[in-house]
Length: 483
Image (cartoon, rainbow, N blue to C red; front, side, top):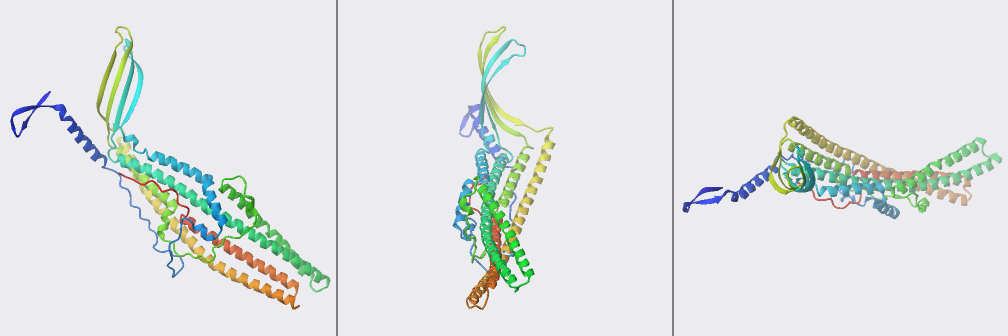
């Protein structure tokens, strides 16, 4: 078939085949579909967490440098704890599970848009004519390219990226919880060992005090009630020893679980120095640090995923448009009336799927996804508020416990000075050994209070950096892309 057209420089008529114009029309159609594909994508909510500019419970009048989220436990000054955390990050089973799920999400994310790429399928089949006069063996290829229109391209990527971000947040959450739990268990273990040591010293002093009182009772220098009271104090001190021993046993077992091993290391049972913050002070904790909190990152990933699902549900309202082609060869393998022949046929054209009777259901699904997106935004805001509350609480506890530790240290130092004075008086025959034992008991009790104060402050420090999401940073996440 030929078509005539006018040319501005020629008076004659030129015959042009229509098929030469088909590529231009196809290009225009493809361009229009590409433009249409970027339309109707669901808007991504802008997430601006309403965090305080300054912390209400931070120390007053201090403008310090930024805190370190990546190695905060090193401030405790315990090389054994540093080594334990390194081991735990390598061997903990919860972290290993989260890492595998993150790797799975990363693999799927690379192929998030594959359903909207051209596909080619090969197939074979055997076909019998309805009138049972012949049968054919069919070999063919089918090609299909469903166009990602109405925001489906961006929405599919958002869903996949949200799943990847959620898996990455879960991995970081496992790391944060692991570092905090190892630190907490180690602090409790070393503190309990110090408590057991001091309680044993108190028991020894109580036994010596009881012996001296019994001697005085025989000399009728003290009443039997004083001996009975001393006996009760001794039994009470012996009973108190069971609590730190229980803590020691549970702590070493939990440390073994955290490190992914069936048995605790024997050296853990050897008493060691208690982790101690010492003169460390909270200098600053910018509110931006909360963005590292895994719960907030997970909530942000949920928002991204919900936005993608909303976009996909909106795209489902409109027709699915694609381009298809197929080629088939058939061979007549059995015939009642004809000879065996082979035939081939080719076809191509648009593929259109228009929702009709379920259109209302698809619209309702889109509205439902819109509500789910709003719920995800509210959940994100709630996660931010919860993070602020936990950080503020831990910060306030940390600052208050610093004062408690300082007071306990001063009380312990004063009693140690008192014991030294009592020993000096005994050497000068101005005091008795009984006075020394009572002074030792009081001094050891003051040390017990100090150990408890140090442990409480250390644990508040752990709670603060867990609330802030502190842990070694994982591998850099894949860049987010909505194009």
